[in-house]
Length: 194
Ligand SMILES: [Zn+2]
Image (cartoon, rainbow, N blue to C red; front, top):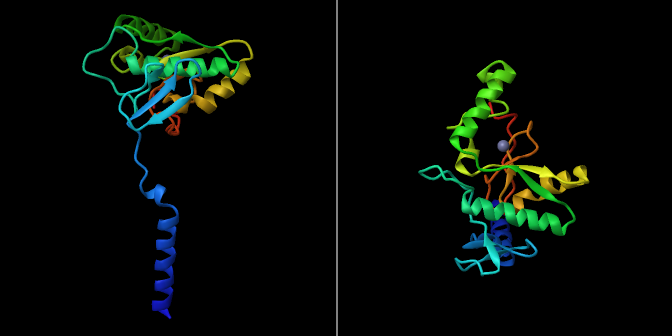
């Protein structure tokens, strides 16, 4: 009886593998690209994106060796693609703050320490220059146009498609490229202090 059950289980398994071979053989795309006009995303098996599209990268974006003087180029693509897609959906999503120099971030952090009374509390809202992803060109603070609530809903529901994730529960506007485009975002942290 046990042997029969095992045989049955095995033949069910082989049937499953035969019927759903794609699930076992799924390979990650070589390029994830967004159309310049529509923001529509295509996963490609070839390594380069066509000329009329942005290359969104195929993994979360990480800091490099030296701090840049502007947005990380792939981060800029992700933001641009999200903005175009939002526009086509009827929402204006702008940038309130993007890349920041070390000096600007230092000044912001010092001002926050004065405002909140301690570095410990200030960190919930502004990180020191050497920790902030804004100084790596890997963070963006969005601003929303009219119809704020609907635009916010759209942003929350769709940012992962462009590889952008809201990172903190206390900052609806702050997004980082912490996912692969199309892969759901990691859980939000309470705030930047941890
Ligand atoms: Zn921010």
